Image (cartoon, rainbow, N blue to C red):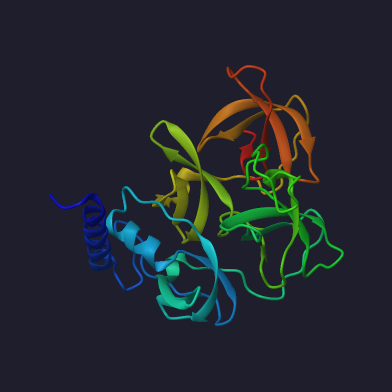
Length: 283
């Protein structure tokens, strides 16, 4: 029998080899019924995408592996596949998994933006809480759990309640239903699952959020979650609970930070802070 370390190394090599063989290079995604697409991103711009290692692992086992979108500087925009820099290496990904952030965006207080957690990592929606410099607004991240106990860089404020100033050219405004980065509730058997749009076509959506997995769903089976919902205390709503939805009642609203507190039906008196984009009046 091989020593445990050698077994793990050998297994890792097998996984890497099978992943590399499984990953298509024509801009399509394994098991995803969508044609290859182009991109509006340009060299030198920030994009949100999936690194090659994670994409290869997904390609080898698309029903088991999820993906996480991180921020990268684009090197080359291709017709179906684009290249970007990951540390000191060049990676590539199908354009279907490349979300452009563009350049020159300016925001005002209350705007919703798509960016990444700039003192951490990973794609994030955020609400602008200060816009003294519209090109570098200060935001509160919406996809970090409001009650997350982890501390931010100031060692005092928790990460779900921290404000952070964004870099210029590092965000795009979220203004339209089904825009990449917005949230939707999609039918999944008897459930309605909340997911994030990666790309939209005339009749389909590529989404992530079904336990982190990528999935192509019929647009007709999804409902866009309101970008900036307007509710008052006592309203009955449907809110995200884990990655599905449950009926709830509004108990508090704070539009400045894009959070609405609810009590979920049949879940006791605990109040939960739900971010904009994760709550709707009905499904």
